[in-house]
Amino acid sequence: MKKPVFLGIDPGKKGALALFDPSDNSMNIMDMPTQPKLTKKGEDTNYAMLGQLMEPPAGVLVHCMLENVWSMPREGVSSAFAFGLNNGALLMGLSVHKIPFQLVTAAKWKKYYGLSSDKGASRAMATQRFPENAKEFSRVKDDGRAEAAMLALYASEQYQH
Image 1 (cartoon, helix red, strand yellow):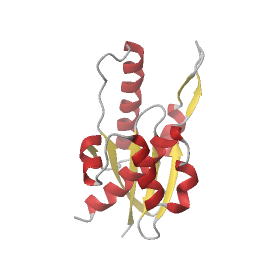
Image 2 (cartoon, one colour):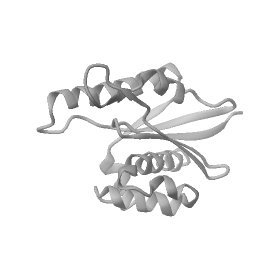
Image 3 (cartoon, helix red, strand yellow):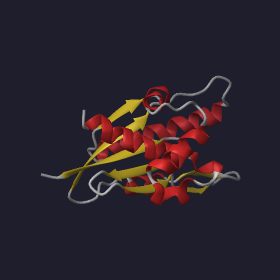
């Protein structure tokens, strides 16, 4: 029987993927891969690399918790479109790699841990729960990493219930 590991995904362009192995409490965190935009300044998600990152390691059974997202009021059209592309690519990657997943709202998983919408609180809790990864949560812009890690932990705890 394959051992279970848990993937947490914060789906934004500045999001991350985190793979948690509860057998040794290890957390492998990967930023959402990017590449330079072809037509303007900035970056786009590198979907080919994202697909490779989502390939399950040999000998494990991956279960995923993907944050359920939608566009925000007053968000620009191009931003909403890019966000939707990322989310669709993640759903396709999970499907292609046959990774079972659940969607969970930020409000639900954060309530489970007693967190507010303050992303700094997510970074602090991830640092506390995974001190060996603390450096990966140290900057303000590392909130996507922290939230992906907490989603992976949440997946693990939900799987056991």
